[in-house]
Amino acid sequence: MIGKATLGSYAKGLIEYCYYDKHVSAKMRQRLDEQDVRGELVYIQNLGIKMHADGKLDLNYLINQFNSNHMQNTNLKKFMWHQSFSFAPGEKPGNETIAEISNEFAKEFGFEQNQMLVFKHEDNANLHFHIVANRIDFNGKNTSKHFHNYSRTGEFCRRMEQRLELIQAPEMRINKRQGLENVLTDKQHLKLKSSVDELLNTVVSIDELKAKLLAQGYKTYVGRGIAFYHLQKNIKIKGSDLGRSYSLASIEKGLAQNIGIEVKEQPKQVQNRQKKQGLGI
Image (cartoon, rainbow, N blue to C red; front, top):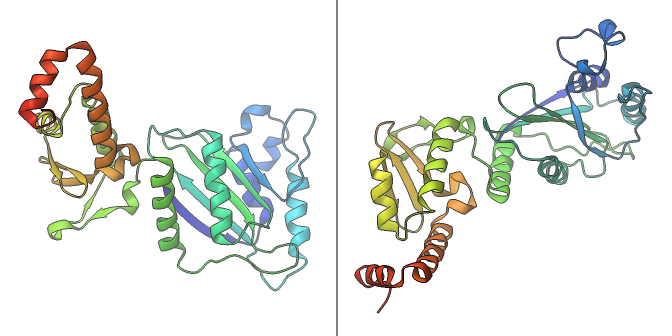
């Protein structure tokens, strides 16, 4: 994931941006059908909602709630927090995953008791979502923790990627090994992930996996963990970067299951291979 945070003082503009087609003016929205709506509301917290007869959200009802709560602390001019998160191209987590990320974000960034909306957008190659939150709680206190936003957002993204087995975003991941700083691309991660998935259905040892990946241009390093080095691109990708299912422990577990399956289907062939590899007696 890639995350970005901004602060603002205009609830109406922010909420309309997240809900309506960004290319449609406010006057035109009054004449258009549901096609002008681009944002799907997937999470709501400490707010009431109303719907129009045509099924659209009553945005004025939401905006008024944000502005009304701002009256408790007008000294805080930029009371609106706008947080966006983008997934890797081709990665499309469900609404439950987005809601889980939003809930964890609220806990970590100080919005657990505050007004908050989350809109999902699918209008470009990267599925992404926008969090609209009030920095002021119902007691008039500014609860948001906005210092070091970039680093904190990056750390939050890494934890969510590991926890939910998401692809690690390239813009916030840099490989500094041997003095190189190679920004990794989503396309390369997806390609490697696909190759490993396919091979794990056919191989029964780490050595066999290494040999087949080498034929595809990846050198595999195994130590306390597992990593893959793209020989042509000079890029190193850790197994954990692809998700928890690609850690060394998970891969070894999958290989052990492959051996068990083959023992039943071709016992003599697999038993001979196990003896050669030191996996059986």
